[in-house]
Image (cartoon, rainbow, N blue to C red; front, side, top):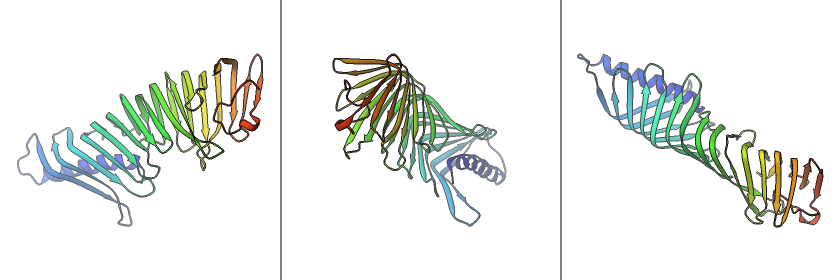
Length: 285
């Protein structure tokens, strides 16, 4: 069961639970409180697909406020969601989470943390203006502001982007590449694709090589997690020690380990025996 359905059913069943509580009370009151709040969801075969727990729920005519939200959903997209506080709008079904918000996907191990998060049921989007941090086995991405689908497979970080990427090389050793940009940055985990925009700077940790450009697109190999291809456009500059090269466009082929710089002049770097030294190959050949 995906997170979109979970959020929607969470809101619907929560509202239904409140209706049952109201109907069982002879004299309604402006506020009711449930201790040990719990809701479970099941599929047509009677298998549990999700559950949400809270230490308590304060219920008003318009909202349900849950303390210590701890939700799980099961199936192909297993994940856990935690927050200190959550508020459900009983009319719209929108959900606001705040304080130590954490979404963890068990399938890939991706985890996102932020201070507050809003879920819009009609748009099926989670958003926050706050700092965010996304961690998965391939690296760490931080930035300011997020717009994403609830399962985090597609996400857009608005500004102050920093990505520390662990990219395996052909010789089996790891390479750490740090990419910063003013943003926005978009990533698609299903397609293993990311694009960075505005004042993009990529640095290899082991060599100190730098690449500067206006836009950088990166594709990763689904199986090996190696960089499959990278395309940099706009004011491309590669710095290696005292050497600097300029171009309008740069294409890196991860399979052939060839770096092609296009512009005036057009330069092709054949790495030869230096294949596998990283994303940005030695220059001057």
